[in-house]
Image 1 (cartoon, protein in one colour):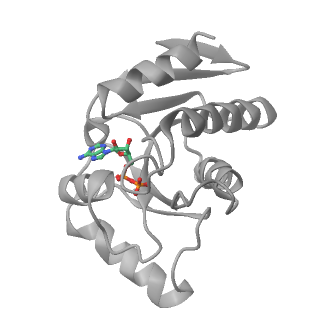
Image 2 (cartoon, rainbow, N blue to C red; image 1 turned 90 degrees about the vertical axis):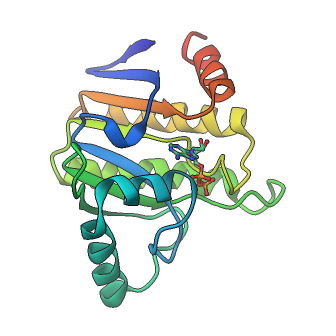
Length: 178
Ligand code: ADP
């Protein structure tokens, strides 16, 4: 599924994010940047130890990555040149700035991408796994934040939203076509 927003194409696919041939894939990391489960574990497994080395060097220099922020490493052994690591909020009922922090995670990932001349980027559904953010609310924020960004800064040619669960693909799909 594809839609055009300004000069960018937003696409929706149900595939393995670690195999994507894009300039950058986004990792739903945690603040420690030391790897974890879910998509984070899958990215480190596919990319190999180089990514963790770069994350450790970053933390040694800058400390933990705050929620809503983003940093970049190489893609290690993956086809993607870069991994952009961002930390989404843990869902705590909705009154703890979760929506704002999730939007920040998308916006800051896109900002880091632009700084590195990324043209094609793939996002997982940040915060909607272990972090428990309700999928429909998260998908709306993902799409709205991305649309606003690419309209303002026309450098990115394609933003690919990659779902893992089929039910997530269907929810994103309804929002894509609405
Ligand atoms: P978070 O902690 O931000 O919730 P998760 O990795 O638990 O991060 O979930 C983020 C997204 O990644 C969810 O859409 C989840 O379904 C998906 N996901 C979980 N495991 C994998 C995997 N092995 N490969 C790709 N995506 C995955």
